[in-house]
Structure formats: structure tokens, C-alpha cells
Length: 566
Image 1 (cartoon, one colour):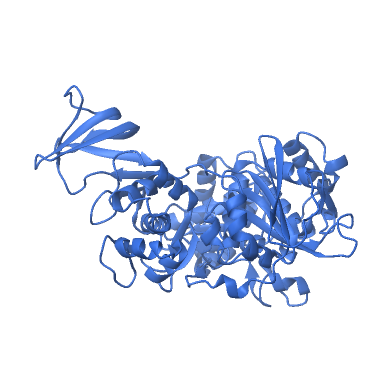
Image 2: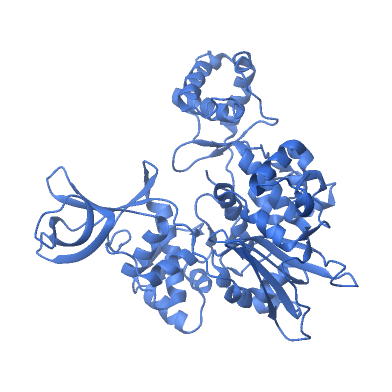
């Protein structure tokens, strides 16, 4: 499922110091790992702050929107786009009058009207049952704040350890969708330009409210954020001031204080090795020709008699091509792939240059790989990206994980070992500038002016609506209704689905967002595809709503109802 977010920020050389407000004295930080909540305080002069522990009451603030988002994603509750009417003052965080905002942008921008439980028609009983399952106990007592969505108010006080425990109960799949949206916070949200300190390690929802009366006799503004680190560790931090100022002011210290986090290596990349160099043989230490999965150490001999030693733990395989020659192919997660590119095209010794190269390599993969059977497929070639056939170094893998999901969007990404040109990252120059103190985001801004740091996939991209597809579906639905109402569990969406242009991959639907991603209509098969994906939305409550064979047969029946006469 592809995620969307707010528009990516144009790569520019950030000047953080000019935007930093007067410093607060301290920042309270907490995270929960292995059932234990850890608290710490960061200082920037001034009087020593009052100590706190995990039982501290903290205001929920706008974090209620994050819990609504998680519930809706996990239960496939439709989240149609919100249209701004210009009358609600809270819409200042959403969109201009007459415009709309989608779910991921609404979360990153803290658009309250979007997540109103009444708008999303969230039943209190279903909500309560959901959090009972997540917490393995009824949301009562110290978890009473989760008992009713309508009572999750910004001023509600919550025990800090309970808040972190609730965040830790979120399933990995729905958490990943929230994280993809929240990565935008350090790119162009309230933490704009702090990506240089956090990379993709911080995935948090910001909040601003007032400090609990027990800690401040006079009401003081409390700003901060809560969410997860890249490995799913729940985290919370807050200090005096607004959330945007807090993130910018404390970013270097906070990034250094948080525990290291290694994200799971998701995705799938198939690499055709040695694309431009015919392979004569692949042999093990005993001289036996290898086929199938490679486990151990091997020597590749090329037609020009050059040799290359490599080792593999099953991620490499040897197949026979149509000409009988051995072909070496690798299958990796995206971060392992990116790390191998860093090892082959540069090195991890100069960390900031390596970070920039990692983002460029991931961007190049996104822009040039073919999608085959759910995997991105690309050649190991000097004409594309060279990929090390040996396991990635620990240093390069750490760099790839630190930049997990980050890409440059909006420009064609190229890089070269030495030659600098517009739209090209020159590795040698990046190393020189990194040694002079430039950060990776500055290196990317210099190499790709006009580009944007974004999140891999479609996150941050705008929906290019297919008006002709939407009009065809609107004309077809009245005719379809006679057949659809006979299907037990069919429920027409409250609003017409939004149909977005799909540039790569297979068509799909996002039930929680009431969206369909496909290509323009031109053939009968395209119309069947549209009917198919609409049925996944309309039959989300049907016992066979995810049965591809059943849905496909029904889609063909609908399209064959002489729709062209409508």
C-alpha cells in the first residue's frame, strides 16, 4: 500500500540558526523499550529543571489525531479527503478554502477537522473493543482516556508511561503507514530542516499545549512530539515553547541523546550482476561449478580471464542463461542494496558524503528500476549503479538505515565519481565539502537544485486525478447498483472514490483513504480493473471482499452490462 504526504520541501541550503527562538532551559525526553520506560533531561543553561519520572501526567494535545489515524488505518475505516470551507479556524492547519487535504498530509500538518470522530463515523463501542485488543485490557482506569474517541481532548492529562505503552501496542503495519506520513515532520513540517540531524530516525506527531498545573503554577506553553523511532521504539519529548521551535532548537542534542534505532529492511531489490562483463564460471573453493543459491566463498571468472572473489549467505544465486553462460543474481532489502552501492561507488568513511550518496542511490533505484513480480529489478552496471556482490560493510549499512526511505524527488538523479555537472552528485566533491563541514542535505541541495527530499514510494507526491476515469465510474454506478445490492455486505462509500494516476506498478485501491490508483481508461481491461478496485472498497465488509477471484468475476459481470450505452 502506497502512502501519501504533504508536498516535499524544495532542497535549499537551510539556515537553522536564523529561525531558532530564545532557548528553553531543558527538554524532557522519554522512550519505552522492552517494557521499560527511560527518562532523561537535556539542558541548555539556566536553572536545573524539576526531575520527572514515567508517572508524570502530560497533556494529550494533538496526539489524539495520531490515535484516530491508527485506528482508522488498522480497521480500514474510510478516511475521505477533507474539503476546507473557510469557516472553521482550525482549517488554518489544513488547506485553503475550496481545497482538500488527504489523510497523511492531515496527520503531518495536524489538521483536526479531518480526524473528527463524528466525521469519520467511528462507533464508540468498536473503538473501545479495538483498544481493548491492543492493550490486552479494557481502556479504563489509567487508560480511560482511550475509552471513547469523543472524549480524547487536547487538555486530557495522561500518564507518560501509559501514553508510551499505547504507542507501543500499535501493529507494525499501521504504524508503518503513520511513520511514512510523520517522516515529513523533519522535512517540511514543524521540524523543517532538522532532517540533517535525524535522518529518517524520528517519526513523530508534534503537539503544543499547556503544561500540567502540578508542574507549573502559571500556565506555560508546552511543545514537543511523540511517536516512534525507526525501529518502532515509542518516544516522547517536550519543553517550554511551541513544537516547531522545540524541534529546531533541540535537534542536535536530541538526536545524540536518543537510543540507536535500526529499521527493518523492507522492500525487495533484484540485481543482475556483471551485466556488461560475460561470466565464464562461478566456482567454490573446491573448483566445483556453482548453481542455485550460493552459500560460502566463490570465485567468479570472466571471459577476459579476470577473477573476483565473493561470499554469499544465500542472497546470491547462479542461473544458466539461454546461451548456457552462468548469470549471477542477488536479492536484497532496499537498505542492504543501498549500502552495497555506497561500498561500491564510494565509501562510508566520510559519513555526510556517504549519507548523500545513499539518498542518491535510493533515488536512482526508485527512478530506474523495473517492477518485476513485486521486486524492483536493476542491473549492476557502470551504465546504471554498481553494486558490491559482497555483503555490505557495517558502516555502509548503518548509513543506509539512517537514511531509510529518504529520496530526492522532482529531478532526475545522477552521480559520478569525479565529474561535477548540473543535476549530478560528484562523489569526490561531496567528500571534499563534507570534510569542510557540509551536511548531507547541503550536499544534496548543491547537487540537485530544485529537487526535494521526500519519502520513497509515493509519499509526499500529489494525487494526479483521472477525471475521465472518475466520470466513467460515476455513470456506471447507477446501473451496477441493482447487482451490487444483492451482494451481502456491500456498502457504497459515502463519497465517490478519488482515482489517481499510477506511473509504475500494478493498480490498487486504498480502502482507508477511498482512493484507487490506476492508469487512464483506454480498453475493456482498464474498465474491468476500475470495477475490480472499486469492489475492494465497496465490499470491504463482505466476507469475500478480499477474494481476488470472486472480485474479478464480479467486476467482469459489471463491465459486461453494456455500460457504453450510459
